[in-house]
Length: 164
Image (cartoon, rainbow, N blue to C red; front, side):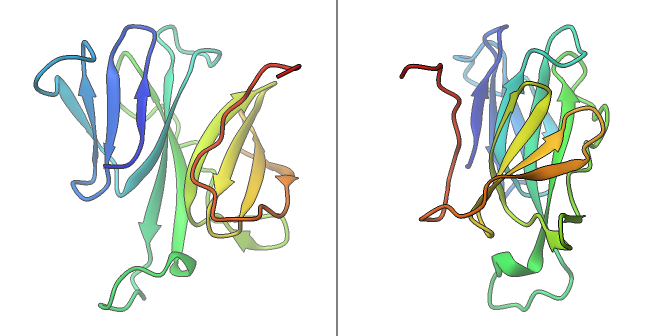
């Protein structure tokens, strides 16, 4: 299991990378999932309430492994990352916010380990490049690296209020 997010309706969403799905527990303390959303290799989850869906939007960072991977195991450098957006009331993709393929100078998003939304931008923490990347939330257009070099392999990102 990788990412966990809880929405305003007290539903818990759990990324199960090996089962290729996100499990939804409504309410969060339900003993069994109330539903699933199929996603290849989900690794990061974030709930966003300021997107154009009444119930909110679940952002799912996923790693799509390329066919050229060798059988000895995944090489993060040989993967493509995507961020998908799902309305929390439908659990069907609204727009694969195709934050994927290439950005900037032909680099590829490969391991979206954490996400947050602020000021109309989607920030994606790319574990492979050790960068915090920014994308326009509506168009998914790459805006630039908010942080170009992180000192370690980043796992998640959080937004804290000024003055903390």
